[in-house]
Image 1 (tube, rainbow, N blue to C red):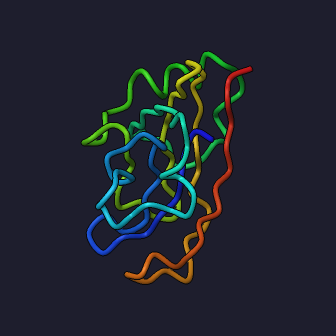
Image 2 (cartoon, helix red, strand yellow):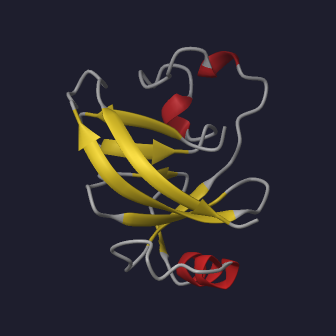
Length: 123
């Protein structure tokens, strides 16, 4: 697993790497079972200037979007996401990809909610 969704009071809709500090003991954000994982993948996230995935036709376009993106702070967590946004990511296995946030719904400060994303990843 390379990313986990949660909705928090401060960070709102968030995609985070399993190794992000949000999931450390005592953080209050640990999804069921994650605290017992023997390995948590490190994924990094960047903003992009894209508004959809229609211009992404090959691996080079994905690499360009990631390389030209701006790191989130920390880069292991994409905070305050909104519908229509495209973020870039790189997995621990060095695969780059893009995620289009197509829907965020049913969210509250107790972490309840859903996010629908469309993802393209390098082969």
